[in-house]
Length: 307
Figure 1: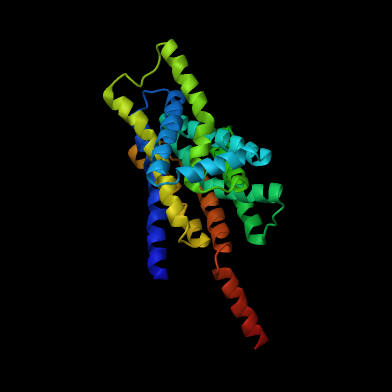
Figure 2 (figure 1 turned 45 degrees about the horizontal axis):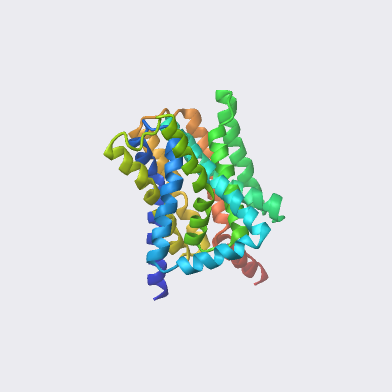
């Protein structure tokens, strides 16, 4: 029974990461729409979808209770506000990058993200780094440095995606809410800005929602595309060991990398390959350091030496 649950968890988690990995295809379908308008629709329709979901799954009363509680806790409310701003910024940068032909940079950003999260844990939560993690940071830094020195430009899209998502994860730790309730609250916080932007676009006669039925449906569907993988991830994360999630999370940037190179024919040079190899090596060392394998091997060596 336990193995069956874990298999279900792996399936859900892998599916969530697979959707995140191929989601650039969706935004490419509406690349004629400005990124800021897509972002506003993504926020608004994600909120609408999550409200429908909470009502249909009978979680609305729990949402209302949590919403009232958080309003009385300034620290959690501040964390919620920050999380909402960070996830919106992350979504906006990602959409703009994808539709600007910078899919490879988004892939790099999400490869770097786990290491940024660990660094934030050290700086903010005073967590300690092991030797393997220190080596991982050095290798990842070399990878970013290789790109910077060769092109003369810091890969800011990649770094911003990694930093905003890392900080978002940190803020989420403080909120500590059910994933569906948390996402509903986060989108609720920024939905008024999205609605205000719709009013501005209408006044300026610039909105593209009613440009065609297809465009309108795709913009509205962005809410489902955003929320669905998060819900799959929440189901999977409950049944899968953290070490397994560590491996599975690289499905998304790997699929994005493949899309960028083989589907959208973005330039992937030897310098890119060298930089990615440093970062892949860093992630391999970091991920292995979080599994049981090094600890089991160390225990066996100690047992052999004592014998």
